[in-house]
Image (cartoon, rainbow, N blue to C red; front, side, top):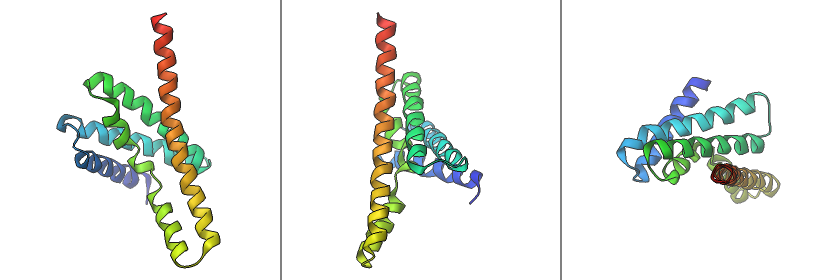
Length: 144
């Protein structure tokens, strides 16, 4: 799948999940763009090539920063954009393959895939927290 197809499908997927999460209608398109930009960073890092865990970390940081900007511009809670934006990064396919390998008694492959899915999920969480910590530090510096 080429990059344009991936970006379009990540936009549609993110916008679709934002509708499922019942976000305000005026923010559905913006949520789609947040997910699109996060996926763009992720696949661009993989093209370098970088480790998928590092790519997920960087992409989730970008998603968090863009979400903070969108939250200020559209006067909406940041979680509206950040949760929808990380949807393309969630390693659901890897977790599915891990479970399938467990069911097929291929435990070695299953453990490798499960560890990869776990580390990518952790990288996404760390990226969101890291970006928020930097944002709080910047705000604190502006106040003082």
